[in-house]
Amino acid sequence: ETGVTQTPRHLVMGMTNKKSLKCEQHLGHNAMYWYKQSAKKPLELMFVYSLEERVENNSVPSRFSPECPNSSHLFLHLHTLQPEDSALYLCASSQDARASPYEQYFGPGTRLTVT
Amino acid sequence: AQSVAQPEDQVNVAEGNPLTVKCTYSVSGNPYLFWYVQYPNRGLQFLLKYITGDNLVKGSYGFEAEFNKSQTSFHLKKPSALVSDSALYFCAVSATDSWGKLQFGAGTQVVVTP
Image (tube, rainbow over all chains, first blue to last red; front, side, top):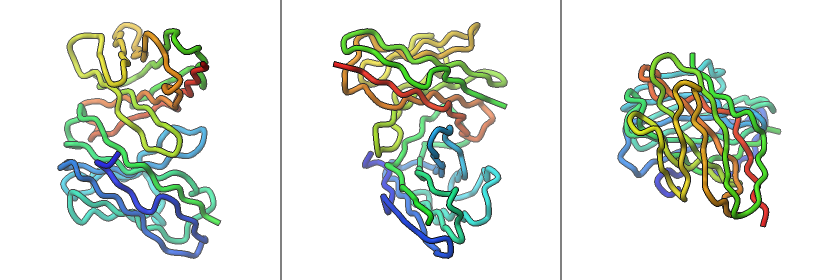
């Protein structure tokens, strides 16, 4: 799991707060992803970046704002969240987003609790 | 559209017995199929994938999976389960034009008892 790191590992925030999740990959990959994992639900793809360009925005509310300054770093900026946004947020990377056969490598996740 | 079904929420098996976790899929065109495992408070770890070629794919930790095109299945197997195999297992599928978009199943909890 050291290939993809995420900080913080745990985050508790109020609905009026602004916070950011950080992801860093040390694998030399060109694609990065944000997923939301809620209990009893399949993983939900939120955003896909390929070479710092956003190529997928999976109908995610605007209170989630991604940023990819370079191919190694990915952020998820959070503001005015709702309690139902409480979940495990997973970052992943792969060699290339356009060529599907490449497996994705996941970070350990950030456990987010919105109060 | 692509979809994945994992029909069992949980699979219970005794240590030393064979383990099978089922997965069926639906995708336009040829599928790329993956298995991942998730341990508590951890991210997903890649186990194995099917791209093309031999229908039997071998992966990490003694796991293997068999691609069956006619049954649109990709079941995960291990000949002899270990207690340490207890975890949440996810099957995923993608297609050639999906921008690396993996469709995950809901997951199957595997419990291996000593």
